[in-house]
Length: 185
Image (cartoon, rainbow, N blue to C red; front, side, top):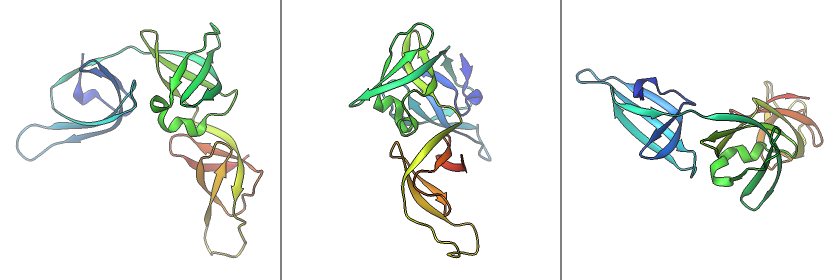
């Protein structure tokens, strides 16, 4: 058991039989009375998000998660198939569980699969991913006095804002935490 004041972004805990990963954490201290902890968390099995407020001093069950290196293979409809590089097993995850991570998945990509008691519950993406620009409007020099951005569509369908000099066919690096352009590769 851990105190709710120890919950931080990325921490996984069990509550009412469900596994949750903290997305946002806020400690609220009013002038009089006790502090409260407000948490926004995602259910790792269903993908649903909840907002929950705990009085300071409450406790939740912490969980032990296992990690394995996997390779992304393919998807059929809402089912995404990976291959464990040690055991060659092929775990399948639903799109609702993966959430926004779908936008960064490329064939053959290496990831970390998170399991709880043998059940795959989530994946951990690398910090950055290199992707090809498939569509963007042409950018013209002299349009602005400062750094300007335009919309670009990447090979997975992800939309990001890129500088004007990026063209169709360029490889760019995207930060998976924020979904923002990092550099041209």
